[in-house]
Image (cartoon, rainbow, N blue to C red; front, side):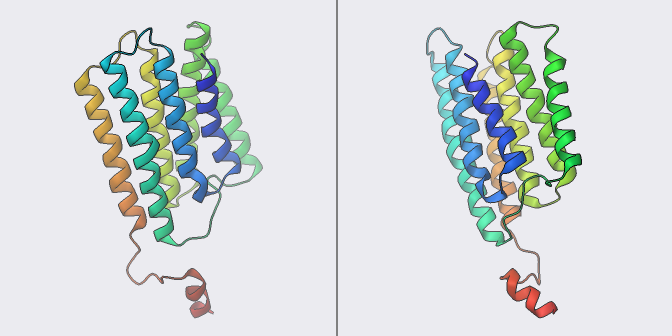
Amino acid sequence: MTLPLVIFLAATVVPVFFSKIQSIPVWLAVQALALGWSGTSQQAQLSPHVLVALLEVLVVRGAVAPLLLRRAIRLRIEPNMDLMPSNLFTWATAVALIVLAFEFGAPAMSDRQAFTLGVVGATVAVALLVLATNNSPPAQLVAVLFMENALALFESLLPEPWPWPVHATLSAIYLLTAGVGSWLVGVREPGEADDPLHAAEERT
């Protein structure tokens, strides 16, 4: 089925072009739901391996990581900025990267494999663009989590799922990235005012 792939791609592209930082945890959860749907839809039967992988996606990527990110964003008390700068240059660059990502996988694979590889490539490319154009700590963390979700989606291209140790390692890395990253995002710099409006008044 290509519908979960379409939803995953939309959960990557829409927030980058049109959403604010504070809405990103919702899109991360949507990505996780699409990721779990895509993984189970390709299996003839729900083996223990598939069920555990689905549980990991829904709990770690669909619930824990978005909640940690939401808490960190609220702790920073920053203006609700765009995830990627809204200007013609960055938008044109993002569109070009997405098109190139789909062209990269098209010649050598079947239709679904090509579309999956295109979604993975587009997600990684857009995430790298966010890293390059937005130095806000929440945006940087979001880009890293997007790339790790793309890596999990890449597993669907493999003839056999990754072994248990690989799955456990990737889950631990993702959880560690979300946990430590959210903690660092939520930490205020020494001397930073608790209220941005108050800080602006003091500077004037």
